[in-house]
Length: 477
Ligand SMILES: Cc1ncc(COP(=O)(O)O)c(C=O)c1O
Picture 1 (cartoon, rainbow, N blue to C red):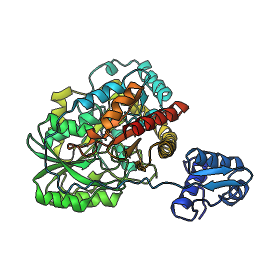
Picture 2: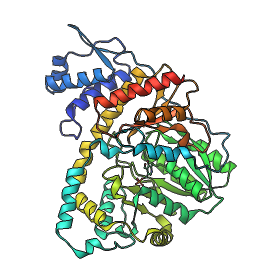
Picture 3: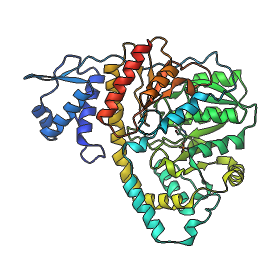
Picture 4: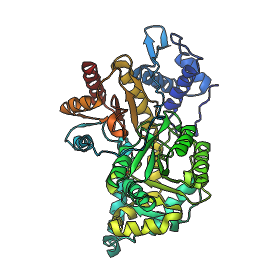
């Protein structure tokens, strides 16, 4: 069924791309089939011929179709690049060793001129610098003495109110007084974990999981237990259930909406079932929701906390992925643990930057934040498709790659026994940063994976860097 939504937020040419991809994925259009002519499709879906042309050119760039002189566009044969989930049946709780590779990864990211594949920085694909600077100037021009002072420990009330309004848009009513502002998502996660667990406790994590969670678990002397996670749909609940039977899990720390590095998204019914399972066993869930507003299909996803009946879910998020990582502003919805988290926030860092909080409150109030997100999401989705296409074209046979449903990273399984830490070192020498797979698991199960970020403006330099990487991987085979 060919339908374009002209009132929607997505660019028309992107909708044409999606429509053709849907026909290919569903098997309606097979490799070698001719695409409808530009005129025919333009008339059928009611968009201009140049818009269809733009979509076909982009599909050609992505390697999904090929142009044949005088004949039109044809569906290209595509390799199967989907990943399968890792089996964690034999996983046991284990200490996490803070590996020097994480430090080297962070050092690499900040080298001047480096290609930034190593850092998950979605908003930098289309930075909101001008709008944010304008807003901050406005805040500063009011020259209130107050803006130089300490923010309340719990955070600036106007920002908490706007965060509550955004959560309401996602279908969950929060009292602004039940929100605590933090210095980024990482502090939010750290405060929550300290509030609900102690050294030696078993913390269940997705497999693979964000390395920042593992570093927290390590630094607090806790044990990590990996749970099988589906590359297209979140933690496998049957595996989680079994792990609960087998081990004394105190807390689960899951990326509730979009997993980093998989880029997989979960739906509301999955999160509801997850919360029901955990609360039936009195297990706490710390949900990492930093990518909650960066899901590509535009479906409303409600924080897992909205499904909680016992108050055992704590939600952490931030503006780092959507607006400005350097502002270091995040927040916690602490559930039953408000007093503990509030106290920890006061003794760890007193409060978070007031000027940044006032700026973000005004950015949200003016509608600029919404406008920015509407423009950012199609760029991210397009970058994901472009990067996957170049990888498919340039990387060696046997490479598998995720199909992200949100966020800003691709998760790539390299063929054979290619060592991601070797690839990482060689790439950095050539000015390309990346995240080696070994940092996403407490065990060593992802050593032949790499994570590449597409959260930066696309350019010829990007494509050239992926080609260089492909060369390094082929050499390492
Ligand atoms: C899944 C996930 N959680 C938390 C964070 C930390 O967020 P922040 O930069 O707001 O501290 C990141 C940053 O990379 C992340 O990817």
